[in-house]
Length: 146
Length: 372
Image (cartoon, rainbow over all chains, first blue to last red):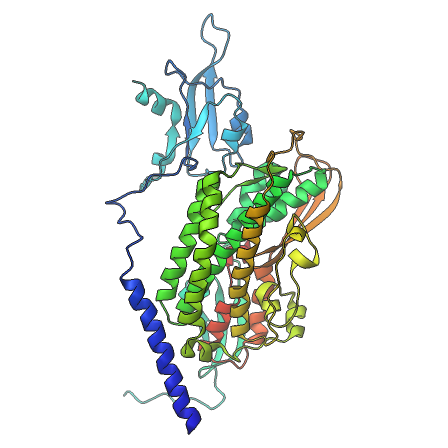
């Protein structure tokens, strides 16, 4: 009989303690952000999909060595380059990233010895079409050119 | 017309739980033969998310396989990468700078806390309490922010490299980690009052699903499943690796073997991980994070190598058989949850279904890690 009432008493106490904690939490400031109306800035080292880095004149720094192509575990990068008439070095003509297969490991950025590719800060990527994730990075660089 | 169906006294029916079920936390299917509310027989069916990670390991070169490890267990990803880099370093004789090893240990422990916090929230939600999940996720978010600032990603990190690390930690990270430790200790007290001492919670776990030492040994269980049954085994202490011998920490062991014991082991492990993080930050030496002489092409000499680590879910081992080529000849991944889960078939016989689901929650299953 005593055990029965002690159990009820203990149950009530633990119920009140739990409710007290949730009541206190109720008045604490909000920690969440109402995305998409508010957004957070990404940290400096955030790893989004890759983007070509331009040099001072706005041309890609890439020399078409193909190291990133080889380093990629999922073969998402395909490069195109040609030697211009009279020129010595190869010039980039297309840089296609198949983002549907990319797992953002960053091997390509590490493999690049010229600092020609870097991570973007983009994370709002959503689409119903697969083609939207096959990025032509060279074209994107041309569009960004001032 | 609507006459009630007459059931024979010994009649059973089959209940199919999953593969899409909130209580199984992933695509696990359990075929349960039920007698009323009691389980007569259960059979776990796996393989719904099999991705051939071991085969990929044989086809990809060593650096290319690095990022696969974090896709296995998405909650405690760093521990898995740790085993892989350690075995390849052992095989090819790469010496890791001390600073890198310390940072690795701190990161793995932070990741372990994050994993246990998520498990804690999900487990209590399985039992019907929703608020603790929100509080646990809030604490976990602090860890993810810290890890994101250093590694660049929040869940599937690709941070460890053969010989060192991808990025060095900065002062902001160290300050954030130092702020985090006391805050987490305060939260642990809150969880104790809110959940652990709650009468309903204790009644649902105490004495439920007792596992004997024998069954744990029979199935090769590790982590809190084994330690909750009184087996004092932790790879960090029993087969020390990395810089763990430098740290002073305890292995929580509970002899009861019930669901509450497994819960208590994990909650105590959070406290021990906090101690390791604190000591790691105090002892963090300066210096490089990558060795000066690092081979450009990783080609371990022919041989058979094995390295086990203690991840959030138990002892994870990587066996590497090399034939001296650019890719491994065989890469076997021993996943802890695979062994922990197979207990379930035998242990849940005669249990009521609600107790069985609480028991399944206490095993801390991550399905992509079982199927890998």
